[in-house]
Length: 73
Image 1: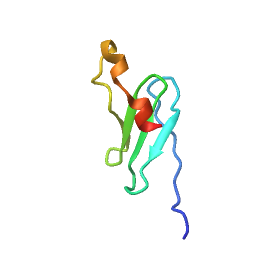
Image 2: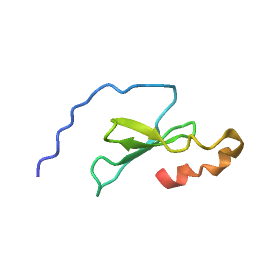
Image 3: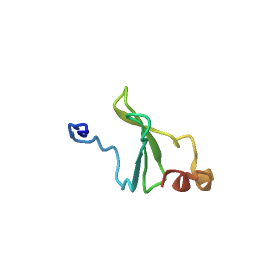
Image 4: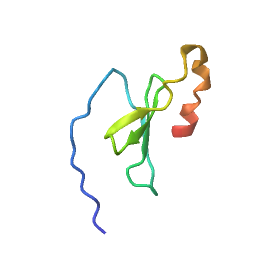
């Protein structure tokens, strides 16, 4: 079975930092999650062709409540 082809494009960068983990869902096409080195977690929005932040609602006073490290990678 041949692998799907992918058309690589440039990524819009709104800030600095690293993306140490991206998890692709094996059973749902176009579903992926990413985590960043500064605590952000994102879900890929296929319809909008953009990453949607999942933790923007958490304020700095609750930094330790994010818990995304163990969930995503």
